[in-house]
Image (cartoon, rainbow, N blue to C red; front, side, top):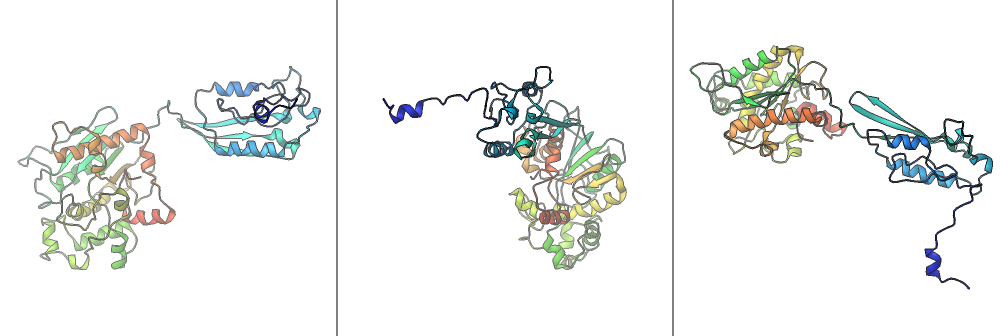
Amino acid sequence: MALDHGLQDRRRPRRPPTSAPQSHIRAKPDLLARSVPLDHRGRLPRQAVHLACLPFRLICARDLTHATKVARAETPRNPSPASTRCPPRASPFPYGAHQRAIVTAVIVPARITTCAVDLSWLDNLGTSLLLSSTIAENRTSRMESHFDRFIGIDYSGARTPRASLSGLRIYAADRETPPIEVLPPASPRRYWTRSGIAEWLSERLSEEDRTLVGIDHGFSFPLAYFEKYSLPLDWAAFLADFRHHWPTDQEIYVDFVRDAICGNAKARCGDPRWRRLTEIRAGGAKSVFHFDVPGSVAKSTHAGLPWLLWLRRQAGDRTHFWPFDGWEKPSGRHLIAEVYPALWNRSFAPEDRNQHQHDAYSIAAWLRQAEASGELSKFMTPRLTVAQQRVAAIEGWILGVP
């Protein structure tokens, strides 16, 4: 009597005879070595068991699933008993050399980079596959630190370079100590000056402790500015040209240059509608030419650029100005980068700090945190196309913008 179709669908398929097993790859979602075939008794090879005991987790790429489908398609429906015969128990492997699948992990200090799956057991089927997949970083090991000290500077473009400004704040931290405020040297001035910050920072960059500095003002201008004035696409040349027309490291206000009292702003002015790629990517960041609005960085940028030129000449090759000197920092150098504290200042409790203090604290705290967690290297290589990288190497990039 014939069974109805519903019962036929629910019947479990018969297992193939042990003398002629189906030698295809069987996926085991609960195992790390998904591409390793079972032996003729339906058991895992010994290597797969050992692999499951490794202290790190492998990520099986989609390519491995694809390889399974390919192997099944290439497998003959009636394999010969000779090609599936189990070798003697004296062999160190529970299956023949024609069925071996060896997973090799390449390990470097604090990081596992790639693994390769050699499916050479398919050679007798006329198929040879070599797959590679990215595997997880070993989070249990500590990454080598690139910096010993972290400095956050909240900047201000008010008044003159030697004026004591409450908006100028410095916080510093190291790998063991959270950020604390750095007060100016004892003097009649209560707060930092822009010239005083530049001199203090130059002294820190002459020391051995590898220092990461984040400064809250723009480090360059949009590409449209370079095109309008036919400037060479070179950051050092840009700084020198800007300082020639905007000598804001002298005892003058930024507004003196804007109002044509001194300098030559008319020959080097920008459009507030121009924005850099990093400002667009950051979202709320304003143009470096957008003066006289809340949250503007235009005045601090125009006041700070000549001091970057001064610091660059003082520091020499000991300091890496990111990303203008390259997206990757050479070993042993200090690093100075543009930052945008609005990205992180809500992540830290303000406690008893005012807004300027908290912005400087947030910069130093985030730099220290990102270095400790290993995320700093990710933010130093933002997701940019080759063309965008070339633009950002001229316009600059805000560290922390992905």
